[in-house]
Length: 296
Image (cartoon, one colour):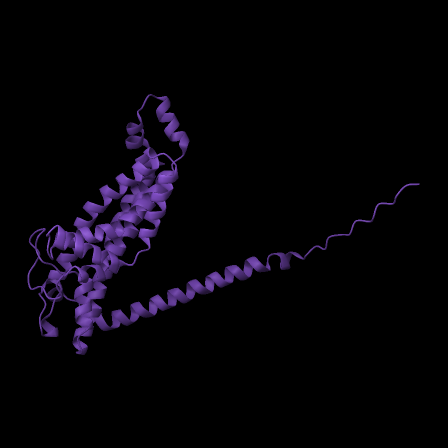
């Protein structure tokens, strides 16, 4: 006598349009969110352009701040922004890339390495005002730099350093191990492999991280106000120890005034800051794409 096996219960098959409905809904939701964000950005740009386009002129770019809105300009703030962001890049890029190379290529993967990674990731999310307080205590008071370009640049360098390190490490991890092994097989040392093979291959990713880091730094106001950057500067910075102001602080100063004419000046200053940011990013993107094509 044989036992009859139970009949298999057929699994219901969902129609194809139901199987893909979740993916379509998620795609539509993502598209809707993107369109809303772009619409908000377009409205903001339209409002700023409408208020500030009439004030943009050569006289506005080459004049010094004034109590009269019609005569006020942004030359010291524009020069200060270029000066500060340049020094910030000179400090943050070598330190950040060097630290990333050491952590990724030389440091053994262990508890200490994981602890350092966690701390760097946490530092990337610290509010900028905390870096301003750190810069005030460390660079302004302990190191005696005062309210100088160097103090502001060092503070912003600390602010963007975690971003530079994280993005550079991710770019180094994306380089195939076969590239390193091939270089070692030809007799190259570790440093020669990193210098001539790994870094050139990772350079497009490194530059992408630098774009993000410096784009954040050029728009920061709170850290520079905390260390004592001036809101009114009737002169150009003439060195590392010179007092300074930057475009975000000048814009903040104009916005805080009750006269409508100064609000127009602030809108024009925002447009100049956007153009400066886009120009800086465009240069970095061109350099990145050129290295990427050369690596391919």
